[in-house]
Every structure is written in C-alpha cells, then in structure tokens.
Length: 345
Length: 289
Image (cartoon, rainbow over all chains, first blue to last red; front, side):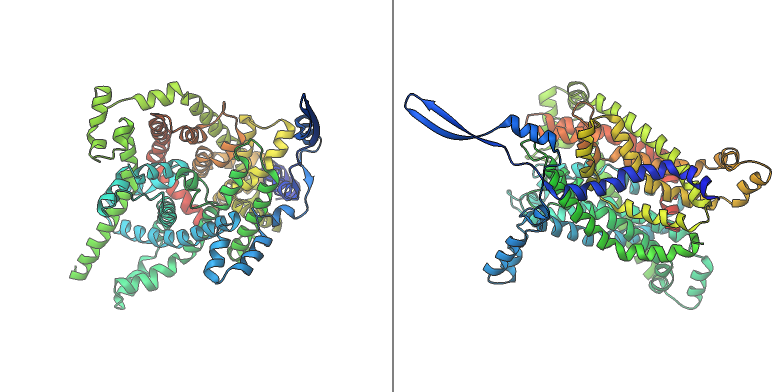
C-alpha cells in the first residue's frame, strides 16, 4: 500500500491516539513540575474599641486571580517528586537513621503514602497474575474433559466474573463479605469470633482483594487456554500415549509446551491490567489498609476541600508510568521479536 | 478406564463445580437480595432471613419488595444515568469501530516497516493506566471548557480504546486473503473502492467481536467517567459509586444493590447472545499477539 493511501486510512485513529494518549503523557510530565499557588496572604488591621490587632488572612480574590492567570501553578522543579507524598527522600533518610533494624525501617517506609501504594500494587500484580494463569489453566483442563453438552452452559457461567464491571463485581463480593453479609457472618460462626471483620484487618483486606482479582481475571486465562487446548494436534497426543506417557506426562510434555505462547500473552495483558488496579479498592472501601498507585491519583482529585492537586497527581502518574514501563520492557521486547517476521518487511 | 483415571475425573469435576459456584452464586445472591429490605440482605441474626425475607415480610407485607428499584430508578433518577450510559456506549462503539476498521485494514495491508512500529506504540499505549491519562486531561479540559460534557468523555473513551481495537482488527484483517482486494484493484478499483465493495461485506465477524470488547470498555469504565463527568450527566457506574457515598442514610444501600443488579442485566444478555464471539475474540488476540 502506498504511503499516502496508508495515511488516509490511518490518520483518524492515529490522531485520536496522539491527542488523547501521547499528549496527556506530555501534559502530566509538565504538570508534575508545578505545584498549586500558595494562598495570597494579606495583613489586615482589625480595630476594636479595645485597640488594634494585626491579623493575617487569605485574600481569596487575589488568590483566585492568580490561579486564573497561571492555572498550572508555580514552578516547583522536582519538589513534588521528592515530597512526603511521593518519593519522600528525606523521610526515608530519617527512617533509615532512626530505625534499629530492617523491620522497623520497612514499617516506617510502608507508612509513607507512595510506598504503601507501590507495595500493594506490586503485591497485587505479582500474586494475582500467576494465580490467574494457574487457575485458568486448571479450569480449562477441567472444562475440556466435560461432555460437550455441558460445555456451553459452563463457559457461559465462567465468563460472568470477567465481563462484570470491576466496580460492580467488587461491590457484589464486598456485600457478601461484609460482617453482616452471608460470607462475613459465616466466617464469624466458623471462627467463633463475633467481632471478626475482614475489613478491619489489613492482611485480610489484602487477601480479599487478591481473591477478587483472581475471581475477576481467571476466566480470561481460562478462555484463552481452552481455545489453545482445541488446537493441540491429536496425533501428538496419541503418539505420546503410544509411547507410554501417562496423563501427567502428556500434560507436562505436550500440553504445557503447546500453551506456553498463550501463557506469555496472558501474562502480558494481566501485568498491564493488574498494575492499574483501582476499582476494587473503591468497591471494597479498602483504602485504609490497601491503596494502589491509580487510587492515589484518583484521591488527589477527590481530596475533600475541592482543590484538585494537579501537580501531585501528575507526579504520581509519571512514577506509575515509569513503573509500568519497567515491568513491561521484557514482555514487549519478546512480543517485538516474536512479531518481527510476521509483520516486519 | 483405570482406577486412576476415575479419581482424576472426580477431582476435575469437583474442581469445576466449586469454580462454577464461586462464579455464579455472588450474582444469584445479589439478584435475590435486591428484592429484600436491608435488614434481610445484611442480616446479622440469621443468614436464612436473606433467603426467606423475614424482615421484608414484616416491613413491607410481602416477601419481595421493589423498594430498592423504585428508590434507585425513580427517586435517585437512575434512568438518567442509564440513558447516559446508553449514549456513551453507543457512540464509543460506532466511532471506535469506524476508526479502527480503517486503521486496522491499513496496518494489515501496508507492508512497510512503520506499520509494525505503530502497532508496538499502540501496545505501549495500551499499557498506560487510564487514570494517569485522566490526570493529563483534567487541567486542559477545565481551561478549554471541555470538562463535564458527554461528548468529551466519548472522544476520550474512543481514543483510549483505539490501541486495542487496532490490534484486534489488524489481526482479523490479516486473516482475510490479500488476493481478495488486490484482484478488485487489478479490475480497476481504487483502494477505497476495494475496501468498500470487497472488504466491508466480509469483515462483520471481526467487527462484531471487536465491537463487543469496545462496548465492555465503555460500559465498565469507572476511572474516566467518574472524573470527567458532572453529577448531572453521570453514567451508571460512577452513579452507583455515588450511592455508596451516601450509604449511611437508611435504605440507600438497597438502592445501590438494585442499581448494581440493573446494570448487570445488559452484560448478562451480552454473554448470553454473544458467547461464541467473545470466546473467539479473546482467542484471536492470543493467537496473533
């Protein structure tokens, strides 16, 4: 296809991505170097019959004018990146000096908002992703053994947790896990502890979110693996059987190698999706014990007093993008190498 | 069948039954509970109340009540949110498919190296967490007066959807033989004519599958719609999140439960009618990607 025809076909799509994906990344990198204006203060002399007092007040009008003139705020260089809510260098330094041992230091670090969010995001990504692949694989094997009459309805039910809106899915589970919901009260009976509440314990909250993540994503891995199972050449399986391979050996030496490329594909998609974990934290109302990087950004726009912290959100966004880039590099390089002969000329 | 195989069958069957219970019961439970009052849905004394509706009978005089639905749809005007969701998803799906088919077709037929680079760029764009992009939009949108309109949200969702749409349709168009449109061009068609008369009639299976996933993205989105829309033109998902904020007031939790069930129905229908396409779509992405 000649270049100009190609351009005619691709420009609307390319333009949309350029303006609304590439440009915003530029926009946040600029915003992250700015911070909200300080309030304009005026000293007012307040005179009463008993004498005059000097009072410092916020000049709301002047502040507003300033904000309208320079909506970006004032230039802050790397100030936002290094403050307490982000990389917190000075707090880290202090914690390192003051803490007696590693555990002390780590608990100090995980109290800082950014590191708290980062630790949960990474834990979620690296616990949910492998579990999704393993459980999805077993569901696929099990469904494949069902009589074909049951396969359709089974796949239908399996798809439900995946297509459900993440916020809705987490709410549905949350209401059941709630201390007064069915699972919550059942657990209280089992453990004979009327005060047991999954919400109150940080560890259990983490576990709950991991369980949600696996529940939500496992069907995706299942569908991909299930489709992969249909493409295994019968001859290969049969010759393995003739050679005396038992079921376990067939799985290990024929099925798993055949599905390996699919596992790479699933982990690529899962790494992307799990690193942006956000809705479950809102749905489970879990921010006291678990926050994620995406949630931090959301929170900067929802901080009570109506002021949106653009600078802070932008800095977290840049750090998040750096995080996902580091995570994705190996997989993207792999995809690049795998696809080169297919598309590249 | 050996004894060992029997064991394996039992194991695999019980595993799949447990999984099916985990996958379906939360939905059935919430559906059933949405017709009860709060004291039953969250029943501390006896979990069976939620099934038999003891408190519901006392409070409303019937075993089932529509109070949650009435409260959500009429009192809290959930219909408005449902309408907005309808508009947003319809526009997002049609626009993304239009842009995506053109782009995907070009990428599949280009034959030049830059097509490959565009796909890699799209893959990187796909990895960007949506909310990081939203934090890039907010300030410019406030300044330009674009914030809070449905149309802005639609355009943003279309753009965010493009990387995925391009990948899907690129791999779909690659499976259509080149000879088809090239022979049309030999017969004197231009590239556009060949696309219109030869490719469009055969592209619908791929387009429908891609459309389903565009629908899911637009319908399920929370991060973008929650931050880009005003309270008056919210779509369903942020509206449900809004119910929770005011959940302290008596009865509002049941509004949220009813709204959640209402919002799940279209998704349920989608799987019911398009199960085959969803499965084949996930597979198509996997085989090429």
